[in-house]
Length: 271
Image (cartoon, rainbow, N blue to C red; front, side, top):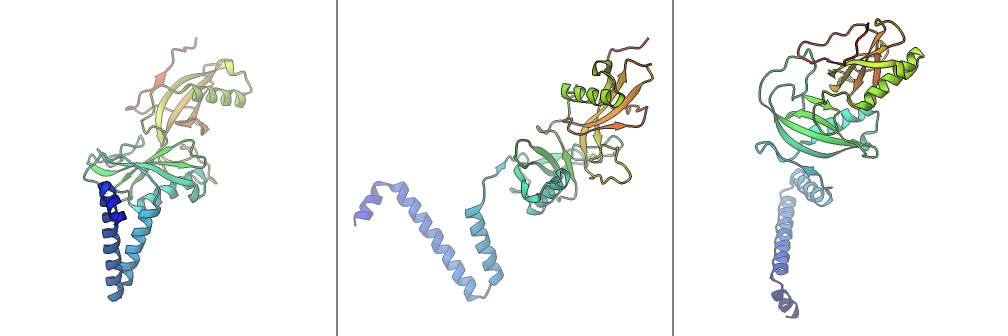
């Protein structure tokens, strides 16, 4: 009687206990019924769901498409983790999904396309997925359709298209690399032009014959530099990703910008 009197003083606690008792009663009744019917598969699914609900780790979920499924499909989750692990050369266990949100894209390219790619203008349901690897100090984003047949990598941390202004860190890195290549002072190397570029592989379009390049779309830049110690003829082009972690020198002396992409040319002129 003392216990009943105590619960009467705390109606919310009493309600919580009643709900828990009812849940366990229904659960045990269902288990007994499945055992009686020899429904081993259904029982296994029930137990798996119950344990996964108790052991699941919290995950951020931002919904922007109310018609989409509430949770990221497991097959899509595994595909993105596998692709990102291969891209970084990391173990799959080191790659984790930290957030996701549903999204309706305006075209078949999921908002990410290469220069010469034709995108079908059609509403496409899908996801934006954020992943981390290793020490989780940085994030990467993937765009995927609802089926997981189309998965595209966006290297920007904030999931925004690259700015039209070339980051100072990339300018400095390209100038330093080109100066070392020519054996001249970095003060004599200047960035002449730059433009955003979406590369179709992890080699930034400059993979060698024996090199294995992962087929993913990577946002980045084409950077044109000049050595002022020589004629105006001494021009070179570098391909980079959006962060400057990957920089490759092109052997092509001429790299004309596509007509639909602005070429940001400096005010530097040669006499």
